[in-house]
Image (cartoon, rainbow, N blue to C red; front, side, top):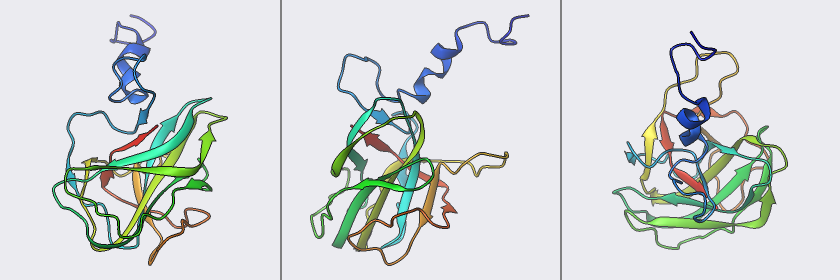
Length: 188
């Protein structure tokens, strides 16, 4: 019997994908992702004007300048507002992108939102990457399904908050509601 029970390998090797999803070679372009690049599907992003935020593990010293989301099979239509934002572990706004207003968002297309000010992560842990789109048709996103938290202290992998949002991210994530669909986000 080992300290690790029945598992005889190195825990860091087995769990490494949690912190380096889709990043097999550390010499490649820096990025952090909340999901691995396998098992993803077309998921509903949310309602028009409602912010969807996803848990994203960031490490000490990471410099986050951009948040990228990838649309699924449904393109956005009659877009009026679209922004991304980065929130602290406590749900306080750190930075947001400019509003991309009516900029087209085709199906199966990555859209990168540059944060107004790059954020240097002082303390590693869970942060929240958020996206809000106001449109007659909100694009679907590439993502996965997530289970509702049931253990004490567990947080939502994805959540919605706010309503009738336009060009400005709320100062805090208030009254988040669990969301089963978890969009993929890539922070660079």
